[in-house]
Length: 223
Ligand SMILES: Nc1ncnc2c1ncn2[C@@H]1O[C@H](COP(=O)(O)OP(=O)(O)OP(=O)(O)O)[C@@H](O)[C@H]1O
Ligand SMILES: [Mg+2]
Image (cartoon, rainbow, N blue to C red; front, side, top):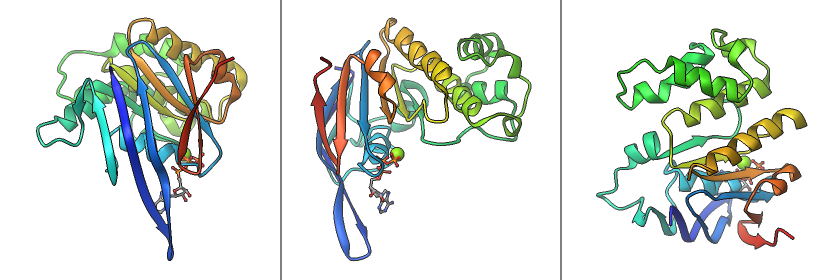
């Protein structure tokens, strides 16, 4: 199994009120599978995805990537984050001091790559409909264009698992479909995809659907 989340919980407090943002959640994503989590604002989606991507520690439970627990001492967390997964965090995450093309290449150079990645980055920009924006700085882009640039950037290191927190927010239907179809396409080469979304479009693309409510995750039937 590519990703296994086993009984993971995270507690937060608002003032004196402690609550489970994520409550005993289990899920799995196989290689080549497209999984989607939908849920209202505040239901715990980003907290869960931040734990899966190793940005946030869980209080309990285990997260296994290819059978190895990501919180084990001998697990190479930086390699996991840089090379094994591509994480598109919620909101704007492209860097304004680099062009769109440089943003897309950045994860490759950060993980020590020495080759010229321009051509591959251009192919990814083409796939998200941004090839004409390669030399543009992100502060000259719309919110939706920035999100598509972030999607291209998450794919440059050819991750085995792509995690995307609301990748289609800010996108009109046409562009949301471009992103969802791109995710679907990469699953065909064995990549696992896990997204959170408010968008009901995902149901046409996801192989496995979950809903999250007050920290509790439930699988829902596709039918
Ligand atoms: N660092 C924090 N400290 C305390 N509470 C937090 C913290 N981060 C998130 N929360 C709370 O945890 C709950 C889950 O938040 P989370 O961001 O995971 O929700 P979400 O499902 O991603 O929402 P949205 O759809 O709005 O992005 C919310 O009630 C939020 O206020
Ligand atoms: Mg969120």
